[in-house]
Image (spheres, rainbow, N blue to C red):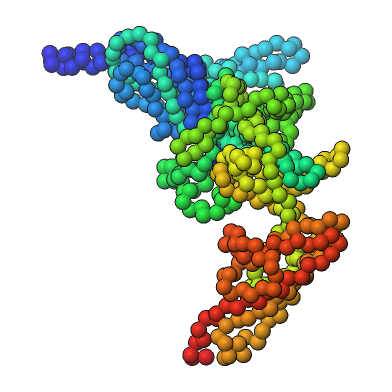
Length: 545
């Protein structure tokens, strides 16, 4: 009997210790840094000051991003062993509150018609689902908002597992008491950025002023005040989400083409934006008699709050556009090397609010040397009579300091403009891949309207050639017509080996990107004719044929 009493006392003592477990809440960070990657996530690093007691303690960090990846969270500079880590974010919404209140007491507040008096009726929540809200009162069971009277619910308590703000908590062992400045880092999804370029060419087409913008987007419900914001350019090695990785677009090694990866990122961004879109607080997910219409005046306010405009492919608020105008020529992101990547840091702390898009200049390069020419790619082995014979208008430049540039260029959309007298003309736009220093950049911005080609490449009798020479021979004639009032340069490109070509032209230029290039000078309102012969071996004949 004495042993049982001792066991009960020990259990009670243990329960008392657990009941006295102290929680220290950090409502917000002292400082925060947000590093955004192109793969729809960011590294959030916070410093928070907490006052720790001597005994075991639970430290709760409120206001972390709701898309936090719990396995990525790291807390340092604690000075104590870490016992446990929890991430809690079951949002405190009307629907979740009702679902957690089944079997619990509530008060129905009803405004009686005629007198306008408010009556209070005690009830128990019986069910809360898509069919509606069922309550049990002394008069029986009823459905909320089906009585015909204005009514709302008052809850006796809010369940402890519902939180108005997401919370990350850690349990620490006993240790030296006092203030600690804890460094908290974690990955969170719902962030994106892109680069966008504007090129202004002079009227002679040999110089351009290049300006580049960072357009960054926060899709989450988290707001950051006075944050140090930076973006990272480069291709990360990531694993798919189903493999417990960070990528929402699958393993990065599965993409051999940058265009397909960009398309996958954009699809994932749109999907994530839809998933994180906040639900209108004036609407309820439960159907039946519970959902009420939005008053007209509320609709007007809602429209004013959500007014948005298009900026470089992203949605941006009017405040973001004000930032763009203020930043022109004044605020410019600072580039830093980060291992194999490039980091662009906004020079001043900035507010990055929930569902917000911002822009900042990260590159301004005046009078960069450029060249304008026309380009046409043709493969005689597969297309003897091409349907499209319109050359592409190209802008090319060397990414070197000697040319006025010499900066790593993150992938992005380039919009080109040209000055004609006192007017500015939009030439077109092109997509540019990541371009390191010292490599050439070629941008195809439009199709020529008054420059055309005629290509004559008759097909030989294949069987006769097989029997006599075991090779294919094609004589190609290219006629370039220039309807412009000034001469133009045309690069005619053919993906074939040098030693298989015999040409009558002295304009054989060089190999470029694996293609043989003739660089032709087509006179104003004139014609240029290029003739060349291509010989290449045929595969061995099948003896059975």
